[in-house]
Image (tube, rainbow, N blue to C red; front, top):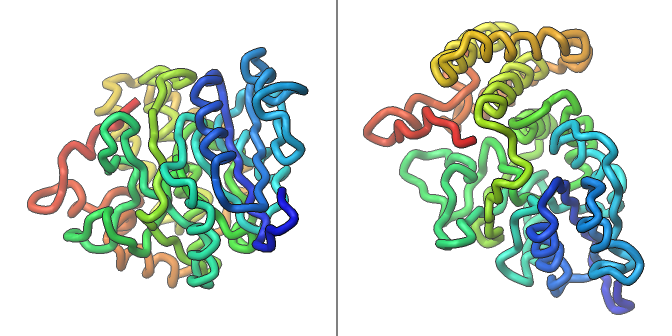
Length: 329
């Protein structure tokens, strides 16, 4: 964007659907960044309000801001994949369309952290409640030790897509960004497993924060959300984990889905979704190696025995929180 900019190009990607006001604030927070050079790639719906923001004479009518219409709704992961394909930077930053960057020097911090940590492939940002400024623990990757708090940096098992940054080399080594067949939820965990398997690591960094409004606009109904989340959990195991993990995970999450929804029809929908995608899932199956499993287990987060899910210590006293048995819609 400016002649005196000599750092690496940083691409911001956003997927949007039905939230023009929140999207405007999100893009404004990127435009206000002091770092250059930047590009912004937005993939979203075809509403007039959204289109006008990027059309000639619109608020974001700039050569370095690109808007691509998404003609079909196949989930946020699919839209983010399109945005990633259009992005050209060696560093790619992703934020939700209802989140804003808290500090205007966040991009400098992203670049600096990647330069200082050559083994890090993903940076996980801190997520704060936009109204209260409190850290959103449900949008924070678990620390490797129970006593640690999200006010300090640590090596993490996964990241949350509300705010994060990717080293393109790590994403390419992992086989690309998100799976297209995850309708809703846990595409970030799938990518996390694959990135760990390349040898790259994930760094949670509270020095970069987003304020998350968590707008209800465009969010799915409660039962459908729960069905899609459980379905994605099982798909994740099929794509990445040894069969013993697949069996335990499918059984555990199926029981959880039935208890959560109290609906046999919901459980049937979960299993039907996995079955319908079985050929694609098996074709994409790339089992992570034992070193990856050992690294994740050492952090006491998402692998326990042959189960892919929260470590019991995250749920049970004295360190756990029983509220983690619930999912917010």
